[in-house]
Length: 143
Image 1 (spheres, rainbow, N blue to C red):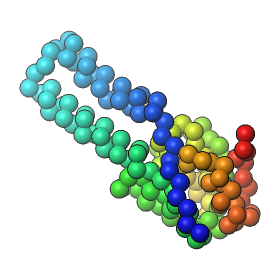
Image 2 (tube, helix red, strand yellow; image 1 turned 60 degrees about the vertical axis):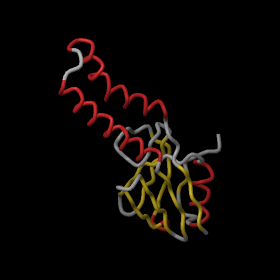
Image 3 (cartoon, one colour; image 1 turned 90 degrees about the vertical axis):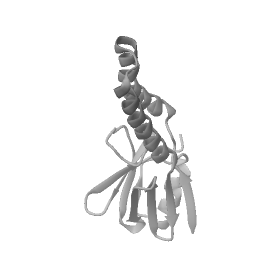
Image 4 (cartoon, rainbow, N blue to C red; image 1 turned 180 degrees about the vertical axis):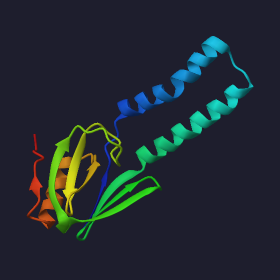
């Protein structure tokens, strides 16, 4: 069985990141005007924001045989043996993870490892995982 799940993207999170990146530049224009160094700074800010945007929009999760493959852009790739997954639950944690949304789930696997992800369809995603490993404690409800 191979099934791909796109990550849920929180556009509010992208707006917050945009504001954090560009508010200082806007305030600099207002108070100091546009100067030579401004072009270098704005180029770096735009490049950095585009990088984050690419990472957000290219995050997905693949269930292939007994493996969960997590891909976040072109930098982060992780494989988790589904038979090692112990539990799946909702989380409000904001730690850095391959989850471009505030609507996140935490997967506990191995001895004490965790990863936070944000599939669009959490219910189907967790059902597919528990179909493979019946021992997963699934705390995601259909509500």
